[in-house]
Image (cartoon, rainbow, N blue to C red; front, side):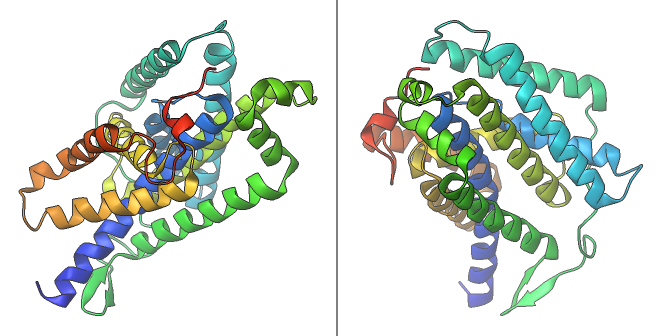
Length: 296
């Protein structure tokens, strides 16, 4: 395989991998604080992208994206307030069913609000034919935006969880919810913050990838499956593992196109998920107790 073609596949893999990593980090934020695997995470990306597309008709693009992130984070808070905290002593299975149900409801509401047309935000820089030559491979400036936003998100979350009081409180909830409550931490508020933060990051990612992948009412489902695969591969609850897992899945998908038909690309992530569950359920960097799921 020529070097420029090899580089083209690698850049494609890194781009897809960074998108999957952001989705997986959204899974991890909520799981770390609550023990919930939020299968509606992919819908946050869809809501962010679709809301920004609608708002961009009335205001500048940066303001539309900012408003979409705020609106989606508020929706995340409402989901926690009206559905999650209303449940009394739910089991892990109960929570999984609830989040899957929420995913379906959000998708159906989006269908009625935006119909089934495929839409997209304008490119942040240039247009659909603008490209940058990198050692013989061509890359869209929007890809650089996606990579930059992914990197900034990972750095921000690292700083947030390590140096802020709210981030430390969320880590305390992750370690032991009862002990955190006894120490005076408002665990209910931390759960709400985790949903808002996860929704905001998902919305930002949805806006960043919209010019490349386009946005539709049901685009969140496939992203949620791949994000969940990456979260399991990296180790549930581990953000560094999510980045590594995202790169692995992205690269495997990109290079699989060279040997398999494009239709098999999505099957790669499912195959990886099954292999991990059979061989190493805790993932690459995960702990064994995380693989067993927490009780809410």
